[in-house]
Length: 227
Ligand code: ADP
Image: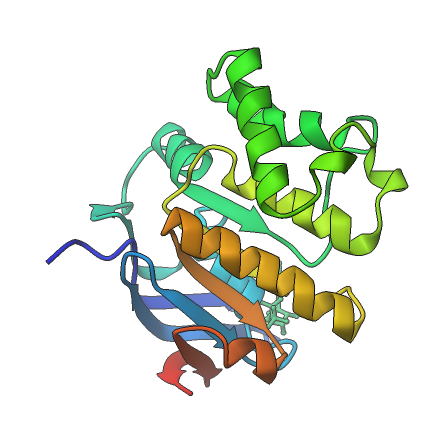
């Protein structure tokens, strides 16, 4: 059997350790995400979803437990190795698009590829293909301020996919959109995920969207349990 694309094992994280107001957010959270699997992370605000996604995405470190990406255990690995894995194997999508305002949609998607050593022509060709796959190729040369909220998120999805990651981590990716737009934009994200065959862990409050994923987990007292 293939290694899971993401494996979290016994992850713990406490903020303000040792202080009277310390917060034990994660207490032994474990999850294996198989190749091509899309899992919904459903929990109320403050339960620790962002903390878990940041640890899974190598943006933060756990107090204890092990994170593995495509079979590579990250414990004790250098910051340089973590940065390379983050850039090449992991795509992030947030509730807000975080596109760079002074660059066009095409440029925003090309930038991570250029940073990864891809030639400019090849990066732009791929950026246009990605934009076409989510139906916004006609907006390629617009800056974010000239795009609707749904279009901005579609561009952010393309940027997350730019370097062909194995793993997509999304934190309330349609949480900032009205319900109708949220539904179609989520559909665009799922199409992109299914076409590329990558694995995704998607935090959402929205049970209807979660129902469209392969399975669902929730955070219960800092551990992950099936929903
Ligand atoms: P969610 O994404 O589910 O809303 P978070 O992971 O953002 O939850 O936060 C979980 C808990 O940890 C909250 O109580 C939050 O206030 C706390 N927290 C998050 N980040 C920090 C931090 N850097 N320092 C202290 N407490 C934090």
